[in-house]
Image (cartoon, rainbow, N blue to C red; front, top):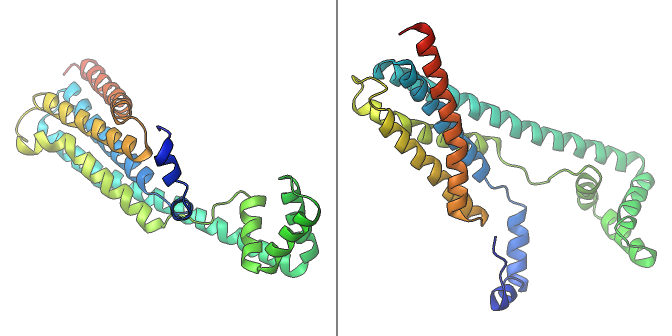
Length: 251
């Protein structure tokens, strides 16, 4: 990411700009869920097409396998992402209840924890006393401080439903791309549609990488090539395995 300079640097550090940036930093981005779903959808579905082409299977068989993969694996991945996000929420609530119990029963011990946390950051004397007093006067702030500083937990977590939806939609959209040539001509052999499927899948990998790079402030071309290389490597492995199985079976 290129660092801003001059007037751009000053405009990034106005009171309003800082407030917006700090508020945005606490919000979860679903880009990671979308990219993960898209890459996995394109890779696994193209792996079926590549394996079918290498094994000499018909386009109809490859199409059926590919569509089954898009629906079943997409749902499975979305469910896994849902459970991960839900588990993170439950863990946060478990620690929140624990800290609230500690504050109710051993408040002085919890105050001492706050004191030692900020003492470790270099505060001492009256300033340290004021920090402890301000934090412990607000119960919610007190609990939140313990969650972030003592346990290293994030307070703003993704919605399990949105995380699952982002993963599922990206998986299905990208996963259908390798199947487009088979949808247009299912009567052909998978090998006949392999070149077009490879091109479309490669373009999808590159597009995912460019989007990821621009969103994260990275060089979009290099990010696109990186994603293309990783996805293409997985697809190449699938094709080689299909080719070996084809030779082994003597088809």
